[in-house]
Length: 218
Image 1 (cartoon, rainbow, N blue to C red):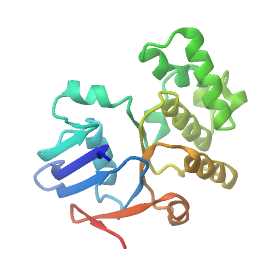
Image 2 (cartoon, rainbow, N blue to C red; image 1 turned 30 degrees about the vertical axis):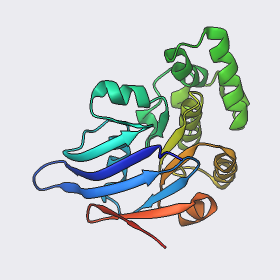
Image 3 (cartoon, rainbow, N blue to C red; image 1 turned 120 degrees about the horizontal axis):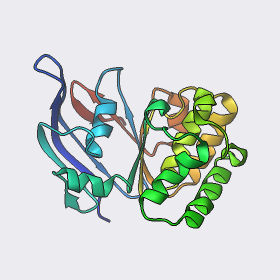
């Protein structure tokens, strides 16, 4: 079965004195839930951003869904297929209401208004957020915003989920619900988290990012 992503010998630095990746490589298989762990500042979020073209590598190659990806057009094509849930939901949510935020992706992908409304209802129900549609996004708690960010990504029905610290600001009830939801999803995932128990509940494989490279954790 073909890999969904293959990252080979990636190099990236924010400046001459800030090398982050110095030869990082990984392969993501269909259905795999891959955990990325490492110290703060190791480059885990950077790696996710590179996977969807929000940053460009200074060396190495990125292949996704059977093709090498180099140009902005290449990455624009894969972003709906690789849904990135940011570490800070305020970077992701920008519409006045929850329903508008969740509908934005389907509408942008060509769905009609009725179809988008149906997707919003289905996605919010899956996350136990049925009553959230009309709520004003910037009035939500941090944990609620995080779940709405996930809903906005799931509404596009991606093939891969890239999750950056998904349990930040979640209380125990919403964290348990998130684990239940993610366990039931068919998508492959790359999960960046410091929450060891969360990863124990979900991950099928783990890699540690250290000194700019990825190492298997056995």
